[in-house]
Length: 330
Picture 1 (cartoon, rainbow, N blue to C red):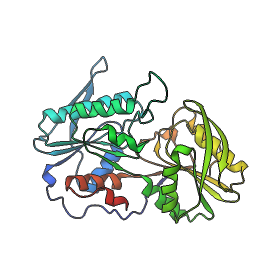
Picture 2 (picture 1 turned 60 degrees about the vertical axis):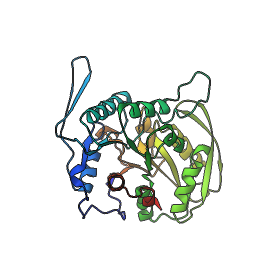
Picture 3 (picture 1 turned 45 degrees about the vertical axis):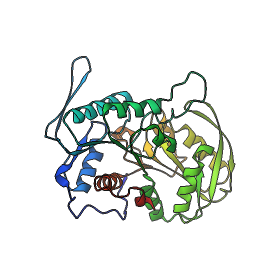
Picture 4 (picture 1 turned 120 degrees about the horizontal axis):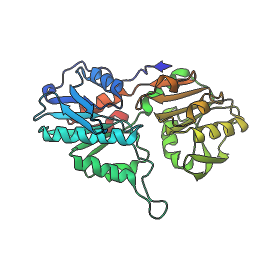
C-alpha cells in the first residue's frame, strides 16, 4: 500500500528567487519520483529526447535551452544498474555541452555502493569508480540519499550532499503508535544507523543481530545482542536486496520472543527471492521509500511505500538557493 507521510516540509509556496535558471530533467529510472519532486518545486520536468539505436546505444538530446542554468538530473542507478548509470553519464555530458552553468546529479539510489572498500586482494572499489565516472562526465555536484556507507562522500572530488530518507520512515512508525518498541540492527555494520533511528523514536532501546556472512547475498544469523522478549521489533537497514538478512533476522527475533517484527529500509532493491521471503508472513509490515520504482508484481500486502520527493525537492531548492542542506535533519 502507499502512505503519504506528514512532514514539516510543505510544497513550495514562494517562488524561487532565480526560478528561470533552475531546470529539472529525469532519466528513465524513476520518472514518477522526478515528477513528484517537480510538483514540490512548482515546476515541470524538462523535455528530453531519449531513444535507443538498433545495437542498444543510447541517444539523448535536451529539448530546451539550458545555457547558464542550474540543471538537476534525477536518476537512481537501480536495476538495470549499468544501463541507468550510462544514461546518467550521457545526460551529464549533454548538459555540459549545452553550456549549463552547474550540473547536479541527483541519485536517490547510488549503485555499486556495497563495493566501497577492499576486503580481499585484487578487488575493485566500484563505488569510487562510479564517483570518478560521474565527475569526469562533467557533473559539478552530487545529491545522494542514504549511501550504503558515509565514506562514499569522500570518493567525490566535487561537492556531495548526503540526505536521508529516514524522516518519512520515522514519521510513519510514530503514526502507528507501536508499543514496547525496540530498534534492531541486522548486523554490526548498521549499528550507527539503527542507533540514530532509535534516538528519533523517543530514545527507543537498541538490539543488534550478530551475523556471519558466508558469501555475497548469503547470511547466517548467529545471535541477538539486547532484549527483544515481548517487544515490537523494527529491523532497520539502508536497503533490502534479496531479503536474506531481513528474513533470517526476523526469524531469530521471533525465536527470541519478539511479539511483532517490522522491517524498514530506504531502498527497495528486491532482487531474486526477496518478494517471496518478505511476504512469507514472518513480518507484520515492510516499509520502504520510493527511491527505486517497484513494478506491480513486486508489491505485496505487507508492503508500504513512502515518498521521499519532498526531502529531495527541499534539498534541491536549498542547493539552488545556497542554503544549508544538513539543517533539514537537525
